[in-house]
Image 1 (tube, rainbow, N blue to C red):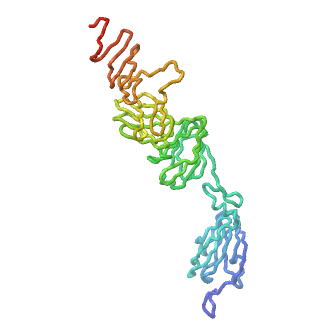
Image 2 (image 1 turned 30 degrees about the vertical axis):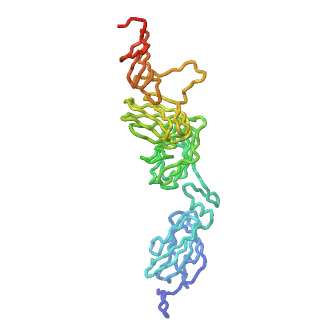
Image 3 (image 1 turned 45 degrees about the vertical axis):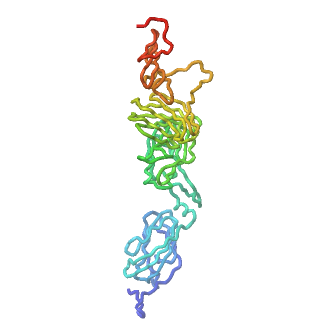
Amino acid sequence: MSYNSPFTGQVIQPTDVSFRAFNLNADIELSWPLNGNATDNYAARIMQVTPNAAGRKLYMPPANQTSVGTDALIRNMSAYSFDVVDFDGNVIITIASGKAWYIYITANPTTSGTWGVIDFGAGTSSADAGTLAGLGLIAISTTLNQAHPASTFINGYTFGSSDRAQTKVWGSGTGTVTLPPVSTVGNNWFMLLKNNGTGSLTVDCNLSETIDGGLTKNYAPGESSFIICTGTEFVTVGYGVSSTFAFTALVYPVTSGSYSLTSSEASNTIQEFVGVLSGNVTVSYPPVINLYIVSNQTTDNGYSLTLTTGVVGGSNAIIPPGQQATLICDGTNFLNANTVQAGATSLSLVNGSAGTPALNFGAETSTGVYRPGAGEFGISVLGTQRMGVTVSGVTVNGSGTFTTGISGGIFT
């Protein structure tokens, strides 16, 4: 049968049918609505299609039996997607549930032809909201809403891109979780974290990346925050400090030279310094008012640990190895908070040593008094014992100068 006009030689235009509705209970092959066409499966300009299962196909008629520009608007009325294919079975478009697509022929030298497609969107606003929903968004009725689904975890975990906008609840004891690389999640990735467990939860960063300026951040039981990626680092928003566990601790390794604490690191009340010293160490703190409990747990190799605000003229604090100090920072000076114990009847000290006397001077920590052993009292000057007192008497190491003489006793 020829579809060319015997008068003009041009392709005969099919009769235009405005609307058809199909129940796609099986694959259907359409034909153009030509005069005398006996099939009921003819194409229309607007078609509503209702497939009863996924994977159904709607075959368009041969492209070379009509002219360029022949078109159809096809809408999916079912919960299942289906394929619109050309006469030879090549997929023109897959139409999802509730969606409508406009298709048209751009070239027709063969039965397959070439088809153009335009997305007409969803049939209803409810379906459109469902299509747009993703991480952090959920469709409720006809509107798109925020969503932060919560899940509890009890083991170490590394967060990823799929945790965007999720609420993660820690439900165990002490543990560590790891943030994803900044390059993986990019700017504006975020999540919500809550420590609902019984121990501290440490949030660790990837390699040298930081959270609030530090390599790690500690969450005590009951604490929570948003964690947001800026594209170069992670920051927290709404970090809630537990009223039960009010103190936080920083363990900071040092070896030699100068170090500067970030505001996040300096916000920890308890400061513990560790490491094997190979030289004198100076740690600079932000010049803010705060109270610190500092413990020097470094290996004593004869080197000092000095704390400073870096403000010119400010007083520094030197903490000997193996000792602790409670310090007040007034924004310029480090001041000893234990200079006077009101109402105390006694003061107990650690034994100390000649190099680090238990009672020493902030400007010269190797000079002071210490306990060399049982029943002994020693006085050290610049790390060397110069006097020892026992129940038997006094021992002086070195020569003595007595400006008014000595009386009494026997000298040997």
